[in-house]
Length: 349
Image (cartoon, rainbow, N blue to C red; front, top):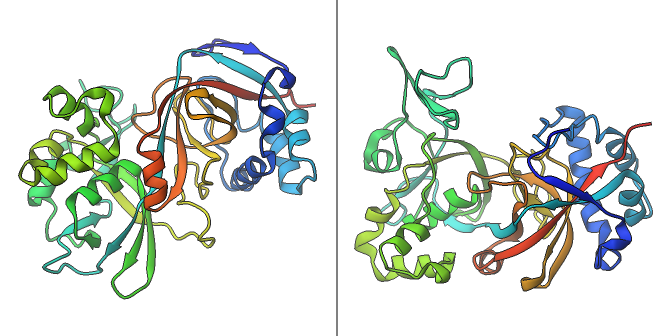
């Protein structure tokens, strides 16, 4: 099988921290994906692991097990991905929001517009890059959707797309980056939203833009340093953010268990410290990975349950760190080299 990177098969005893990990926490996350599989199987990534390959492990997980480590050792073979690895972190922001626009709450979280259409090989306009996944349906055909600057200047005003309103434009932007949020409404109720679609334009991170402008040294770019720069330069926020033409639309996604994270791309609630965002083109959701990042003293079994436009490559991952400001403080500074050991399903009997 041709794969995006070579695989070096190991024994579990070759993994230094394997026995010291909390396999039960990883198993619980995997089990949520096992039940999701009953509704709709996950698409197969370029590494070739299919939902059918995971079927035996899914069935066993749904039945429940007493020995979580033994479960993974029975159903999988570890294989180190021979590629330079790197991890970052993400989290679920918790922000105050209003159901209506007020003098204080002026920045909307928008739902998906009706004319925003998915692009595939069947309807892709001639000359469009294969990576463009969304466009705008018009009477004359599909054209590029409005970009961030156009939307924030009013291109979608008056359409009734507003889910809620925030008080801070920078908070809204980082909700776009994270792809989900927990909204504490002004009446005391709580609402959770997650990614629904995007404008189709490529993402340009403000950290790279600010580094290129000489405003923040690239080595010092973190979510915290970006926020600090915006706070010190409020008159330049639009100048920087509008260079990122990508715009994210959201939908309500309630989660019954408040201890769990938002529902993400794999359609299950994320688990702090156990859910991993991966390159969806290469990896199949629910695949377990043992991630080793020595610089951050991190060695943990994680489950592929999300993705993101910045997560590109066979050994690239984004660690879900939880919800709220404390989780954001952790996630915002994770930028570390890492080894990725993929757990490959044993052949079905």
